[in-house]
Image (cartoon, rainbow, N blue to C red; front, side):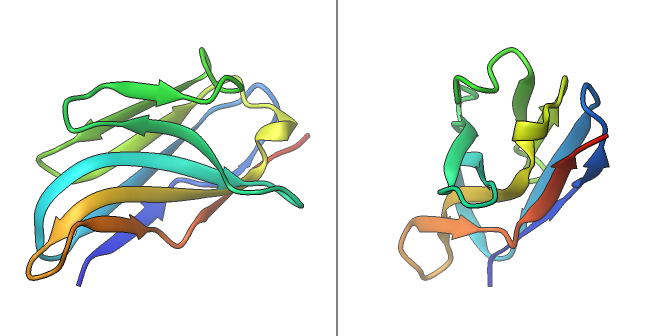
Length: 120
C-alpha cells in the first residue's frame, strides 16, 4: 500500500527557513508529478509548488523567490525548501503525488500533513 510520509515541519521565527521532505513508499509502478499544498487557519487548501517527473516546476505567486521544490527520483522523495518565511505561511502542509500503484489505476495520493508555524 502506498504511503506518503512528510517530515520537517515545526516552529520558526519570521525570516527563518525550514525544509520539508515527503517520501513515497509502497508498490509504486511510476511516479508522475509531486507537489506541496497548504491549508491555513480558516482557509481553503491551496497549491504551494509542484514538480513534474521532468523537473518542470510551478509555484504559487505568494511563494515565488522564497520557496524551492525539488525531487530525488531514486528515493521517490520531494522536498520543499522554504526561506524568508512569513507569518502568513503558517499552515498545515500536505504532500501530494500523482502515481500508479501496482494493480491500481493512476491517481493522486496525499500525506497526513505537517504543521508549519511562523511566529516570533
